[in-house]
Image 1 (spheres, rainbow, N blue to C red):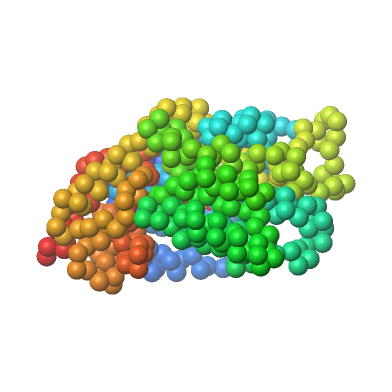
Image 2 (image 1 turned 60 degrees about the vertical axis):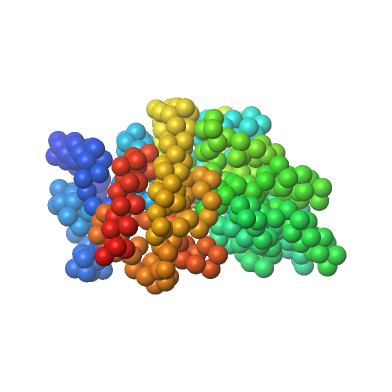
Length: 468
Ligand SMILES: *Cc1c(COP(=O)(O)O)cnc(C)c1O
C-alpha cells in the first residue's frame, strides 16, 4: 500500500473543518490584526531544514502553519494595506481554491469542464472591455506573463511563422510605451529575443500620459534608421500614479504604421465596470491585445492574470506545435481543441478559472464596479487631506486610486524611514516610489475592505509622527 490517502478519513475531515472555521475567523477578524509583522529570525531559520525523509502528522503541520506562517504573510488582505497594487482577495475565491484543489484539474488541454469554464471567463473579460465575442485568451500567473504573450503575438504579426522557426534573423523591431510603463514590458521584449533596448520609452505630459508628438517623432526616427516599429503599448493605469494613456490616439497611430496595439491594463481594466470611470478606457476596444489581472482590483485570490488576443487564429499560430502525444482528436478526452497549451507557454496549468468564475458570479459586475468606485473615492479623500495640510504635498494628480505624496522638507531617506516604521508598526502598509526625482509615499487603494476611517487614520498617524 503506497497511497497517500489516509486509512480512515475522519481525522483529516475534522482537521479540514477546523481549518475552514479558522480561516473564516481569520478573514472576518482581519482588521483587528497587524497589517504586517517582520518574520523573526528563528522562524526564518526554521525554513532552511533538510528534505524530510519521514512524514509529520497534518495536525502538527497545521500548528506550524498557525505559528510560523499565518502571522507573517504580506498582509494584503488587510484594509490598511495600501502598498504597491495588491488585491485584497475574497472569501468566495478562497473557497473556490479548495474546490479546485479537490478537482486537481490540469487545464492545459483535453476535453473537460475546466477549459469550458475558462472560456466563459475569457468571454466575460472580452465583453467587459468591449472586444469582439470571439476574442481569444488565457488565464496566467499575472500581467507580466500576459504582456509577454502579447509581445510574442505582435512579433508573430510582424515576422510571421518564419521567426518562430528561425528566430529574428536580424529583424530590427522597435516598440513604444510611455515612460511610466511597467518593468515587465521591457522584460517581455527581452524574453522575446528583441532586447530591452527595443523599447522606446516615450516622455509623458503633466498628467503622466504618453506625449503623442514625441511618440510620432520616435517612430519617424526609427523608420528613417531602418527599424520596423511593430508594437505600441498603451498603459491603462500606470503602476506609479494610475495614469491612462490616450488609447484611441494610440490605436490610430498603430493603425497608421501597421503596428500591433497592445494595452497593459493590469489593474486599470476593472475601471470598465465603473460607470463613472469607464471612459478612461475609451479606445481599449480597438486593442489587438490586452493584459490585465483578476488578482488586483477584481479581488480574486492570487494568482489570476489574463491576456486577451483579438485575432484567435493568430493567437493559436503564435504558440501551437504539433506533437504526437498532444494530438487533437475528433472525440473523447483528447477532443475540444483549441487547448490552452497552444495559446501560451504553459502545458500543465491549474484550474485558475474556477475562482475567477466564482468571484465574478458571486458578486456580479455591479458590485465589483462599486469597489472600483469606492477605492477611487477614498483616494480622493486622502488627496483632500493632503492638500488641506501644510506639511504634506501631492506629487501627482489623483486620477484613480493611487495617491503619491511627500512630506514637506523631508529627505528621501527620512521618507523611506517613515514608511518602513509604519510597516514595522503593523499599523499601515503604504509603499514608496520616485516621482519627478523625489521619493513619494505611495498609497494604492485597491482593497475592497478599506474604509474612510482607514484613510483618516493613515493621514493622522503620518501627521502625528512628523510632528514629534
Ligand atoms: C501589476 C502590474 C503589472 C504586472 O502584473 P503582475 O500581475 O504583477 O505580473 C504590469 N503592469 C501594470 C501596469 C501593473 O500594475
